Image (cartoon, rainbow, N blue to C red; front, side, top):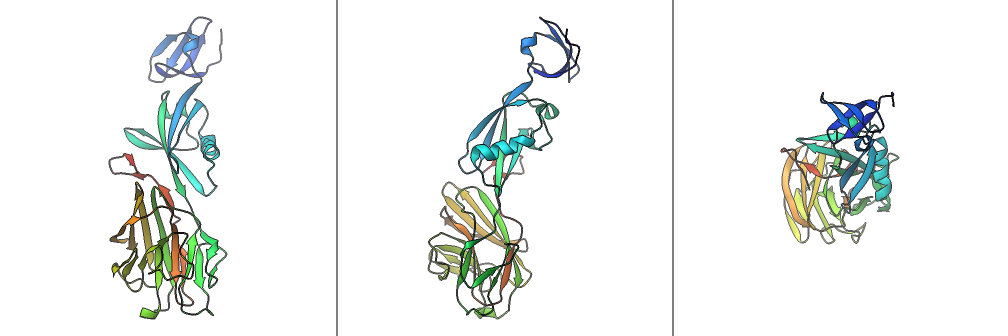
Length: 303
């Protein structure tokens, strides 16, 4: 007889073994009942599957010890998907309501059943790309603040973010740290562009979809129309890009006030971009950009 108590998973749920003989085990179940079960029906692990809403949407499977916390799960997801360290993973259990899985949770603590399906979503963080910027733009040490060089001329000078966007939902913010307030002479363009866009190119002419912060216009794909409100020093511009199938919807907001959709046909494989035309202008990334599956008010996950 085994006298040491142990936690097990059974067809009746989780429980503690009170007594175990060669042909029978007595289990105190967590819901209050007592089960008289065969030892072969007692399990120390369960099978879980994870639907990963990321770049290639794979389903991963694991046999997980019921007492083991999930701290190593996030490492395994990174490893199996070859995700870079800038990608954060969140895992959710949908059981009437959405429950976010923490690293200290375990199957036992959450009473997860065998063959439970979890959902994982990812957040792709980015900074400015030091290799994809005009020579007239300098990046400060924090890698999130950029400035047009004081000795440069009035010209179009751009910098890319170091992440390519093709699927999912994306949000990021650009804060206007310093603007000269020279009206029409001073301009900041915020948006997305393909890798073919020239770093010294005119945003009106290239594969560029964006918002003119001073001129209050949306530009791109042969569009040049009034849009939004004038942006000044201290304002925060939120950029939102949401892909459905292969088309992206791009919109902007100022200090939380939404301007509405600017474009509904942005192609995949674009990069965050900022273009500065006047010396001394300084902007910085606000909240770090995220690539997330959205969670709706009805507690359903959707893309």
